[in-house]
Length: 322
Image 1: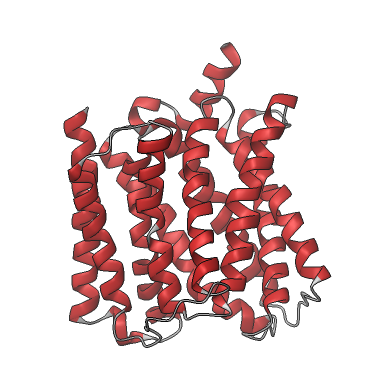
Image 2: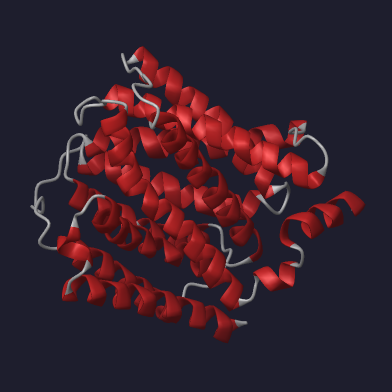
C-alpha cells in the first residue's frame, strides 16, 4: 500500500488534479500534439532513411525499432523518478503481453500493411472511428462508464471535423479492400481495445511500467517481423539519429501520459481527444512539409472548431455526470 501511494505521488502528484477537466485538456492536447507531429516526422524519416512508399517491410522495421527505443526511454525515465528499476512482476506479464499485441503489434502491423493498399485520407477517417469504438466497448462490453446521447453527439461532431479536414485531399472513393481499408479498420479496433484495457490494467499495475514494457516487447516483435519480410533500416546521414530519437520520445511521452490519464478518467473523456491527432497532423505537415492547402483555410479552421466542440460536449457530459 505504501509503495502504491509513493508511486502515485511521484508520477501524478495528486490524482484529483489529473481528474480536473483543465488538466485533462492540457495533458491530452500535449499527447495529440506529439502524435500529430509524428505524421510529418514519419514522412521526413522515410526520406532520410530512404524508405520507399511501397517498402512496407522496412516501414515495419522502422516502427518496431522506434517503439522499442520508446519503451526503453519510458522505463529509464520512470525508473529515475521512482528511484528503482521498473521490472515487471509475474502478475504484470500477461497484461504487458496483451497490451503489446493490441496496442503495438496488431495495431501497427495492420495499419502499415493496410496503408500500402489504400489512401492516407481514407486511413485517417477510418482511424478516427477508434474514438467511437473505444467508447462503445468501454460502455457496452466492460461497463466502465455510461453510454449517453451527449457523448455520441460529441463524437459525431469530432468525427465530422476529421472528415472535413480530409475532404478535397483526393483518395476518397467507395471501394473497400480487405487488405486495405479492412486492415485499417482492424487496426482501429485494436487501438480502441488497447485504450479500454489500459484503463482496466492501470488499476492493477503502474501505467508507466505497462507502457514501457509493452513498447519494448511489441517493438521487438515488429522489428523481427519486418526483418523477416526483408525490411532494413540504414542510417544514411547524421540527421537520422536525432529524428529517430525524437520519434521515440513522441511515443514514450504521449502513450505514458495517455495511460496515466486513462487510469484516473472515463475512457470517453480521454479518447475523444484522439480526434485532434489528424488535425494537428495536417497543421504541422503544413508547417514542416509546406503542405498549406488544408491547414490554413476556412475548411481547416471549421474542422478544428468542430473537433473542439465535440471534445467539449463529451467532457461536459462527464462533468454533468460527476
